[in-house]
Length: 169
Image (tube, rainbow, N blue to C red; front, side, top):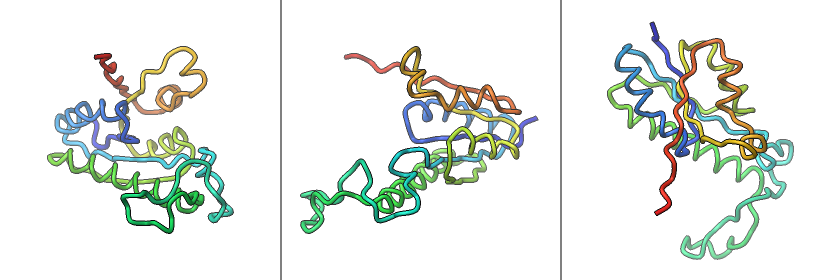
């Protein structure tokens, strides 16, 4: 019934909440899990594109304990930020794949608008399993919801798993 399952992840609590569900479904159907992380090029710093030497908005390069004295306080360029985020995304998909050790996995890192990349990738799968941050009301309106857009627009079944509420203790 399901031979290929897409598991989009950004490494957040919301996406990790779906990990056991995707493992269970993959084991039940002997399916391959496609672990996908999307570099959001709509992010102001990552979307600068043409000028990789232009200063990025967030982040600083170097730390006092990192031994990079000459770089402390220097603003990160868009190219450096892109490279760092690319490495972070690659680490996320590899760590997820290793946590799914008993399941056949494929990993991918792609760039673009997250929901659009996920929907395009979904053309080659039978199901999507993804986490949601559980935003409601104003937060969801302001931040948008990748999961909500995927649910509304996908041509395959989508299972969403809400992140557990953070404890206030």
